[in-house]
Length: 469
Image 1 (cartoon, rainbow, N blue to C red):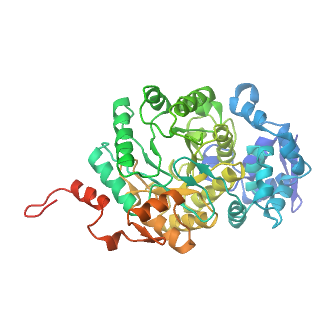
Image 2 (spheres, one colour; image 1 turned 120 degrees about the horizontal axis):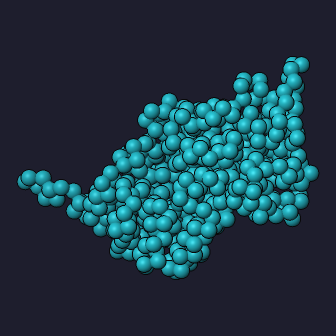
Image 3 (cartoon, rainbow, N blue to C red; image 1 turned 90 degrees about the vertical axis):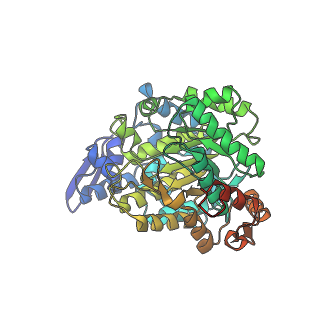
């Protein structure tokens, strides 16, 4: 089917749905690199005009990636619920945008249609939305998940405490964890990106977190973000695996480049659940990012944002505890500057929540991108207003192992203060019991050098001549 629009007597034609989605996508480096972007701002607007008139039902009849060669496409078809789709089946893409923004379309109404929406419908709708639209709709949505803490509740903002170290030094990692806990970070999880994927090293890190968690009865979850096959083998040998992690993408070929497929993820989920640690059955942690399929040469001529939303179909098939987009991590070849990173972060958050995922965002950029911490402050604040489930907590916002800039323990405190949001309830109660919080206010500075976490942190510091530790 050819899609058409006319602007100032100039006629534009788009040969298929895939091309239309590419040309309608707001400008980003990944699509320009792949040769998929609109050739002018006028062509982009023409594509958006044409896209607004496409019936949602059309997305059920035209695939952007052929199902015969892609298990993600087949998964999307199998997930589609005709009954949930029925209330919106008469709508166009533009009509869906208007319905989502209506005041009468509240959390209950939006949640009722999530399994009737395909990722391509959601991606298409986001291409017609301003940033304030993406924020306004996402704010209505609540996706709640439970492990030892409850993430995603109204009025709450969680963090993943990320204590990475370039040599996986246990002492340094432990110091970072304790520092983060004293700032109220870690209620989504304590998650380490290991410098090496060796099983013995990964197990050591898992046991380090689990020992600390049990010693202080910390209500949180541990995760070492090794490849799923490494963690699967450790889980089968009884290692203390709380969350099974894996990066995922929106095409079968891109997932193969990660060394995974749907069957492997299902096996990993079953093995993790068999340990009996996830009492609510939510044990998977997935990360995504716009541009991953392009970097794997597995994009099939589809724009980066549409493929990102297709990855959410993979995620929601496994009822995950956490999902986050590492929005600026891949680099300026894919999201060139702060403006593109901001747009992508708000798109991803909106799309993930609309499809029913517990969305967090790693508000981040690489040092060679045209972005800085001011851009991240704006995105972080906008996401907080939009009700993001969690952000990252990294010492000084500078990940010394992955070499990128993210958000700090202090950034989460800032959001909690200015937006009046609080940690996960179980974690908040623990913080108060440890005299780190009182009535929602941070107390560790007033506690001084008292308290068990302070003492453990001091013990990790190098002794100075003439002084104690």
